Length: 418
Ligand SMILES: Cc1ncc(COP(=O)(O)O)c(C=O)c1O
Image (spheres, rainbow, N blue to C red):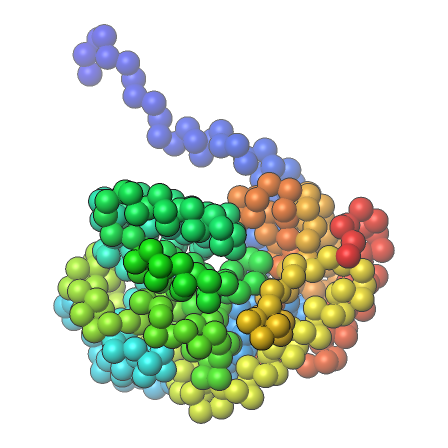
């Protein structure tokens, strides 16, 4: 280094002085951190966490299939047949017959021409968007879209035009602006929003995309395995499968494993297979994960309706129970026929971040695990306690949880009320 050159800034400096450090340290000091808590049992409706029996109201294991003997057998058989890992990309030495079977069955389930399996759901979004879009294109996203969607758009270098959550007049405005950007236009929305648990207004989104000639991609992470007669997701629920160009899903929720997929036209899926860097330059999922997802998919395709009905009845039961306690629950939205669009996610509005953390801790100590959603996962002042249901919760679990919640919230007089 020459004598006049300044020493470079230490890139590690942000680790020592980022804006959340103080909050993080304070939360750790008082054992209030709602993250990284230890799960020491299987992910059922009742779990053991940090040595205590806990009712699980914060899992995405919507159908409870992580404990299903057929799904575990699928994982075990894959492990015995192919070993613990494939140690290579799908492009090279990482494709087994299980991957191909899973892709074929996913495409059948989604009723699309083809499907491609990624190692995680995050990679499915980032890998698809980062490949399909380019710097000359415009992508329009709902502000509630999952981080993996935004990261995929950034990776592509596409022009990002976000619109306020579920505000269709804002979407239309963005479509109008995008038409003048001069490139291709893609709208990407979550079918079911992960934090709020509401469904997107798919009929209006489809109408607008068609009017403006935009392509549409739907993230079915929380809708697949839950909504629609086949459980194919929000697109099926609304009867609009043919109007959605590309559908993404994960295995880390109803499919009881880990991984993700993109389903759509054969030429687009094949293009992803040979061009998506998240697909090509990352090792293929471990065989046990693929075997479990395939077995879970088969359970869903054979006996899904009974599981979906149980899950959604549980969600309705908890939602009504929380409302009866006077809590403010995020409204689930309605379907075109006027019925309530119930999903497995039932968030309670708390507002203030610290109050949400304190409530979370009080519930955790009382034997209930929930997810706390604070800024930046939600807008400032919009903290939520996100509860989510499983088909394997029974009424005893839910009544027990409601009784505990009633006792705990007595110490929180400032909670927003319905
Ligand atoms: C809406 C949505 N999309 C994508 C993902 C990413 O999926 P995975 O966690 O399986 O990588 C998630 C997971 O939280 C999600 O909620």
